[in-house]
Length: 290
Image (cartoon, rainbow, N blue to C red; front, side, top):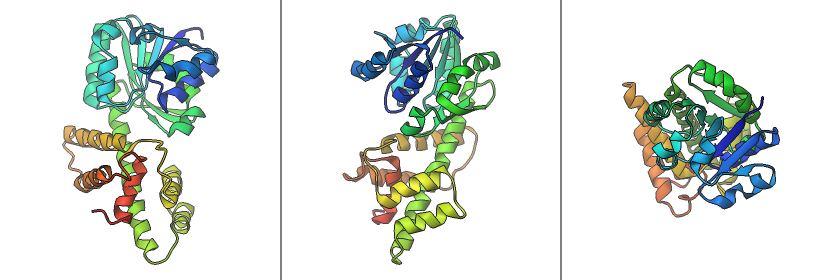
């Protein structure tokens, strides 16, 4: 398949994802607000784009930006016009409301919009092992699936309305947050009985709670390996807010939401935790910060 690709947003996740496309032999135009982030990719064969519109003008473009504000700042109407006749795939965790607006704005510019948020930390992205939740016009998702497959091990197709993928991502992250908080509370309980955290996490993950979250985050929490952050705690608080928005839009009351918000607020107010990985919320229970 011969096509020119664009990639906007080369942070800890986006950089690894773009590298997968470059290594697969695609012609990739890369752009980042801090231009030096593109240096390694350019050395590997990518082409540096001077402006967002240059990347969006590719046959298929992808973006991996931090939050709604970053997306709004980069995907302006002027930049989106460069995507006319082409397809854009937004892979960040953004609000469904923004995804709906972007769907309309790309359509008004004569372009197609697909949402494809991902599950996985930076190391998983670099290995091309992400789980990718894709939603958008079926023909468009069909067309971009080969590129998504270079970045992920499984593509979960969630229908034709792009914002549904963002709602599902928010719900998944809400589950992850619950698991991290449960780990923090239960580790605090068992540590105070003299049980090493590593042993308790091994018990959980080897018996009733196997899987990526308990095994991966359990180890991080047990060993308190919160820096450098794989996913910043502020981004976790953002995702908690997205879950709240999704629930409100569907008329769902989240009983545990107030408690989780309080945990994040306490963690982000602590000078030792505010710049840590989002799993550091476990320390709020462990250190009795509530």
